[in-house]
Length: 169
Ligand code: NI
Image (cartoon, rainbow, N blue to C red; front, side, top):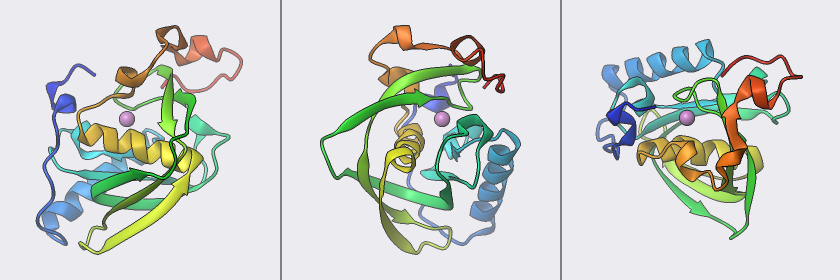
């Protein structure tokens, strides 16, 4: 947080199935796994493209979360399917050691392409919907602290959750 590359609107991908795109996705996957992320967006590693990845079977940083399928989502478009929003704790690998209470749509449809440029869409809810909104916000230059409504619900993970003995990000 503080790097201007995280505050830009990312460019769409125009060429798929290229060695450069495969290398980017590998780099992003390595980074996400190394840091136990639920997802990662290309701007977080300094790449100005509309590419996000997310998914896990079990995530120690969100130990109560249901699994999310491992997904590559390029040039995404999000459409909320209900007005309803819910608040829950979020963290971000670009804001290490902190958590904040963030409102998100509870149900949405997302559309985009996979690494080969094949279009797909899904309708999702709850934590899956939250993760997609968080990652796609990165492509619009938005970090989750910018969405917190009550800044008294923003703080250091180990202070907010002292009993959990969890990692510090
Ligand atoms: Ni993030």
